[in-house]
Length: 460
Image (cartoon, rainbow, N blue to C red; front, side, top):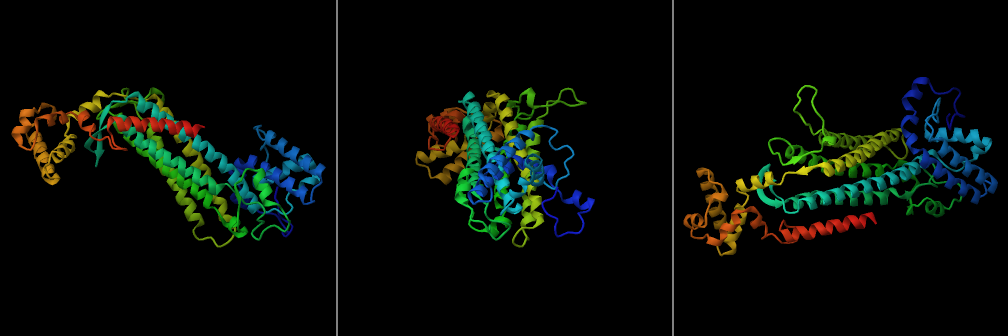
């Protein structure tokens, strides 16, 4: 079925239909399309296009269409241009010629915008909920190993010792920003476009504010031409999804490494790993590798949207139909990856003794020593050199930090004081880092409690 054709002597070619019709992917909009049409039917009645009886007949028919669409047979034999035309065809089946009135004063351009915004608003809400669940899982695994000491890295080299919860809360903060970014996107999505017409505004005195309120929109759009041309809200979402997947990919990369034999810090659950068809010993981190791979896929979705929109003249162009599949894909990959990451976190186990040993065997305490010297009165640049020479001596002599004594360090340099030997244990040096945001035990305990409070607030 088509919603146009009077100006044409013949119909579209079979090849053009195959090339351009979009029902196979935009049927996701069906619920939004019927709900938006119900609000529009109420408004048509208010301006006198529909009688109260006609309005109620249409409202009931749209309810039935939504219910019918739950059946796998709903789209069987469908030969419709898009979801809007399949809805109108089904509406004709139920109410006859009355269906022809529903499009009075409404363009498919604004209808598409409304459907996309309604649908995307719901998907943002679901995505925000999944991020909240993921954040709760991060808090749980942080609390499971509250005193675990691990090396923190820069340039993939052991740098300074940190607490396991401090490391985990770094990702918590990333996902908290992702949540904020999605909610900011939701505000721009949640603007009501109906009443804009094809590009010039409707010729009927519709109460746009009333319709917006009926569908839970916070505001109405300000320019009808902008509505017809706009896909910013889709790009906003795919950008937010891309950043969230970037963070998921970084977590995946960490845990792929940390669960491998060379690190051996962690054990991933059997339910999120796979084996090899040839090598019986393998336990592969496929779930994390797929998350890492899907991040690149969504980055491609964002590039696709930008390339589609970059040169389009005002207002609507059919190119804009190409925005929906990247948007749908970004939604699917984000939500699937968030769910997968949560299961990985929930089933992972840390081996605290392994990263602790890595911290103790390395010179992650060097900064602690330099700062202790500075606190004792040695200018920091000189303190840095003294600590650096001590590291060099340890490396040259193959002498681990735990093998040094108070006598050794005071003999090495008079600036060292005997009580500084306690800092040769990584957990001791961390106690100097109680500044808010630092890895001191007290600061981390407070940050973890605050993270737990934030998750509870998000859930409320």
